[in-house]
Structure formats: C-alpha cells, structure tokens
Image (tube, rainbow, N blue to C red; front, top):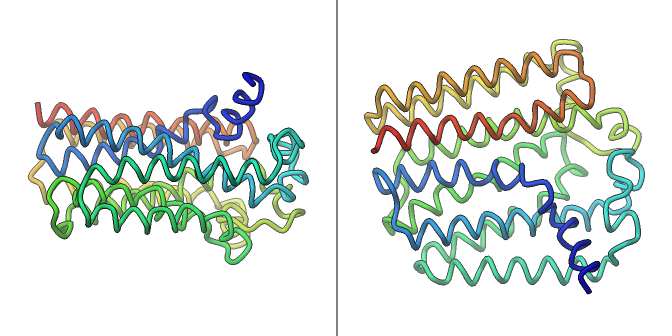
Length: 288
C-alpha cells in the first residue's frame, strides 16, 4: 500500500515541488494585491492548498495524455505511467480525486469564484493537448497557471478584477512562456523526433542561435508588466527592489541557457522559483 502511494506521489510530482512554487508565487502576488497587504487567513490556506492539489492534478493528467510520447523521450521514459508502474485508469482516478478535492476547497469561497474554478479545471485539463495542436503550448500553460490570479481577486472582493490584476495575469503568462521554454529546451531534440510542439522548437526555427533572445523578450515583458501593476497600485521602493532582484535572476538564467545544455536549461527553469520569490518578498515588505 505504501509503495503504491509513493508511486502516486511521484506521478503527482510531489518530490519535485518547483511546479508548486511557480504556481504559488503568482497566487500570493494576487492575494496581497487584492487585500492591499496580508490576506485573510482562510483565503490564504484555501489558495495555498488549492495550488498543491491543482498542480498535482495537472501533472497527473499531463502524464496520462503524454504516456506514449513520454516513452519516446529519454528524460521522461521512466515516469510512472510510461514506465508501466501506474495504469492509465488509475491515473484518471487520481486526477479526479485531486480535482474534486481542489473544487471542494473553492466551495468555501463564493459563487463567482466557483464558476471561475470550472474555467481553471478546463485550462488545466486541456493543456496536454496543446503541444499537439499548435507551437505555443507554453502560452496555454501560462493562462492555466495564472488563472488563480483573477480568482484570488474575486474570492476576496467579489467583483470584476481591476487593471492591476490583469497586468499581473499578463505578466505571469509572459513569465510562464519564458521559464517553460527553458524547460522545453532540455528536451528539444527528443521532442522533434516525437512530434511534440513547443516554443523551444518554434524559437529555434525563428531565430536560430538567437532563440534565447526571444526567451529574454518574454522575461523583460513579464518584469515590465509587473512594474506597471506596481505603478497602478502606487507600490514603491521595496516592490521595485524585488523586481530588480528578479531581473538579476533572469540575467543569471540567460547565462545558464546560453550553451543549451539540458542540465543547465533545467537549472535555469528551476531558478525561476527565486525570481517569483523575489517579487513576493518585495510585495510582502512593501505592505508591512
């Protein structure tokens, strides 16, 4: 029994929490924006737990959809479904349990937030299909990962999100494209053979050896949109200091990916945890 639970936890990527962090930081940005400081404890707990559940559910449904493709990629061929340790039906059941648990949390908020949660589930469940349909699945990932931003506002204020929240959402989409392109760069050759589409492949086709410049454009756009959101909320020194620290992490990531080595690209991807944390620390101190 314990062994099976361990495999399920691996399928949900609980042993690799980087995805939780990348979903958590934008959610916390939005909660702090919505409350003009620390949010209510119940909302903080609901959204933090929801982040863990939805990221886990997303990993499960992604591996279910990619179970045949994963077997063709060196880095993913030993994942639980592709490696035969979890049956596809088990994965679907686990996805349902995680999604229902997340939905139960949302029921503790308000009706508009519950309706938005349906959109969140649709975005998360449809993401795995995007890499088969078009070369910009990373944009879809950003839309899915960032949907907690307007949800956080609605859960707090029960009103249509204002411009700063949508600026945060746009910033998260741009940031997601940047960091998930770094991630996809690690598997680019295998993905081409397997027929998987990604911005890592598209940027190489568009710009050749200047592909990382396009990643840099999305990093710059994310930081600019975050700055605009801060200006709209009259945030000052500490928030801007957080953005400067975030920009330093972005430059470090550019240095890591310049050789396009798989390990370095994955390290650059993981370093985005600190970029998101830097922005949150700036927000946290700004509203002390």
